[in-house]
Image 1 (cartoon, one colour):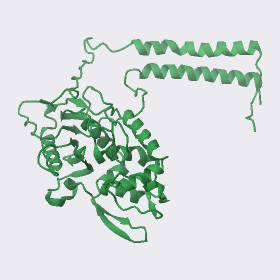
Image 2 (cartoon, rainbow, N blue to C red):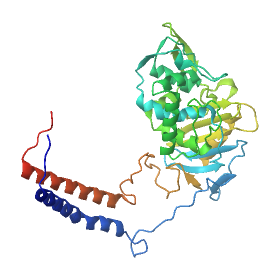
Image 3 (tube, helix red, strand yellow):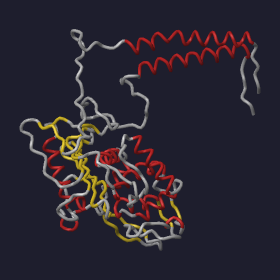
Image 4 (tube, helix red, strand yellow):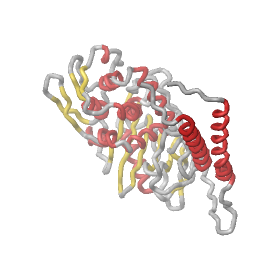
Length: 393
């Protein structure tokens, strides 16, 4: 159906719309200009946030008197942060760009898990298992056999299976599409050091992340119940493709206590990794006395292959002892500095719109309200002039 407007009707309708907008524009202007005066008697006191130290080189920490010193660890880069508030308690070269190895699978899971229900079953093709890098860690996915998505996630988190990642990536559009989506997810989370080339974390030219970004991914993952459940799982049964199953165990030794590494009390998981270029990398989280800490450790230079676990242990111990006794050196929230919130800070969000209570929200709401009123006036005018309008068939 096509509706024609006379020039008089058009002018009348436009006048009504403009009138609706003008009605609320003063409110929008007032919302923009009227702010509490922090210096007024009885008014709120403005507290300037401390500047972030996270882009400085070396170890960054703001110790209060009596707080224990940060442990001396050999990792090229590390971060200790409160998972609840996002406060970074201490860090060393937090934004140094380094190969992440399989810790990049945390970003893969954050990106892909929300769009792939665990109950989906999929028959694996030959093409989906092609181009897996030589020497990759594998869980044992077999072409021509059918697997549930939940089984594949067990393979990703427990065995760091690059074969499982390849299959899951094929279900969201393929390898390049998965990498592009991961890149967008990283930017949405404020993780700007990460450049994705291979969704499984296999070494590739230009693929880097940072201890800061890995801590952001770990914190975000803990807020996804599925992610949190998979990353904390010690063992699981994996289908062999012939109707039977075999056992797999998490390779995060700080969680399992394998190979002589003492398991850490209260450890939640998250993800470990290793490649020849990245060395050993780890994102880990632990909970104690109602507080959850997340640490990321990249490429220890001393102590052998299991040093990454022992250095993470010492950083977690320090973090639990220092929490509430140090001033934050930065924040995991949106990658920026902020005034210190309470311990139950809101989770990070990918939205660019200001949240209620943040600068920009009142004027945004007023303008949207004015636009809505104008639209309502136009709809009323159309109804009065033309009566009920039925949609086209």
